Amino acid sequence: MSAPTIDQATFEALKETTGGDFALELVDTFLQEAPAMLDTLRDALAVQDVDRFRRAAHSLKSNSNTFGALTLGAMARELELAGVAKAAAGATPSLDALAEEYARVAAALSALRHA
Amino acid sequence: MRDLRGAARLLVVDDNKVNRLLLARSLEIQGHNVATAENGRVALEQLRREIFDLVLLDMEMPEMDGFQVLEQLLRDTQLRDLPVIVTSSLEGVGNVARCIELGAEDYLAKPVNPVLLKARIGASLEKKRLRDQQKDLVRRFATPEVAQDLQNSGFSLGGKRVHASVMFSDIRSFTTLAESQPPEETIELLNTYYALMFDAISSHGGVVTLMMGDGLMSVFGAPIPLPEHEEMAVRAAQEMVEMIVLFNLERDSVGKPPITIGIGIASGEMVAGYTGTNERATYTCVGDTVNLAARLETHTKVVHRAILIDQATRAALGERFAVEPLGPVPFRGKAAAVEVFSVSPGQKR
Image (cartoon, rainbow over all chains, first blue to last red; front, side):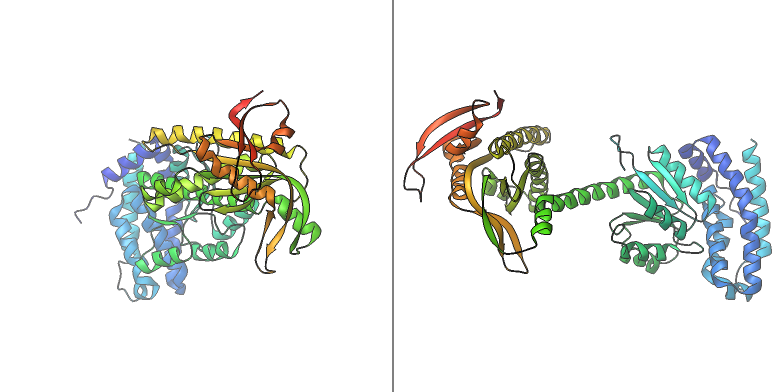
């Protein structure tokens, strides 16, 4: 994958428009909330809950794009559009692949957080 | 409600904490007062409890989603006019169209661009301000006096004799003005003009009974008696002229020509009541006094004065106003010439 984990321009713009400290606190909030979204995706996939699956994918997409995690955002978008049935059939990025990308995003954001 | 600095009270509705914090932050930076709700149900509770100027609404939410919120708002007469901007990363044009059909004012894709956000909020608040102003106009047009009178006496056609002052006013050369500019500008001008005139009239106890184009008829002293209605009518007229002077300063600053108004006031006995049919009726006054007020208003053009009054009004004013006698004028439809007086706008003795 050639796309950077975090798009620097997006992240810088976020810091600039909201104030640096606030952007860093927002990173903390995302790092606290995102694991629950990944869990929800797994749970919803297991029980084929259409709405919860779509909502969790939607939230993850939206937050990823906010921080410039464009690859993660694109994967989440694919899941949102495909829905739980196609995800179960393996027609989308796997939730493991999603979790791996999230781990990269979390590491990159933490690095920016402590830079 | 909005304060003088243009700050508005906004409600941000989003189930996602990052989105909620981010949007609230952007709006606070823009100087607004922000509250948040994490789903549609909580949002509706807040909206029914407190007054907000605008809602920023996410669509994908548990418990009650944005579509359901929009549906509920449409059904609620108190909240129907509250502007809603949908902020979402909804997929599909169909969903966006559905939001608009359900009354959403605007749609902003997430992540929300702060510059766009500011522009859309500004536009929405401005629209809301105009709507509020119009509602206010309607409220004033069906005045509390008339509403109270209806409630007390019950609605019945026919009138009773009252002693009151009648005022006619209109914009000079309005037709020429209307022809020289786009209709939208004329409507905007009329709206501002009406807002200013209604305010001056009702704050002096007057009731607007008729609006025709740029013309207004109002009565002071009916349906409920008003002490010193002659003086109240004259004071209202002076304030109307003052308002137009201020309005013209504003117009001049944007290169628009000034407007002038003419006002005629007559006092005396008349018959006031509801005329029309049982389905559609207006409160109005009829009689010689009313006709005379209309003639005086027309006569302002001839003598180039802003405010003209009749003998009866003049007599009731005493020495409290600077009044100039213009002598007797033979009006059409009047057997004898009528004494006409001019009141200086803004000059009180």
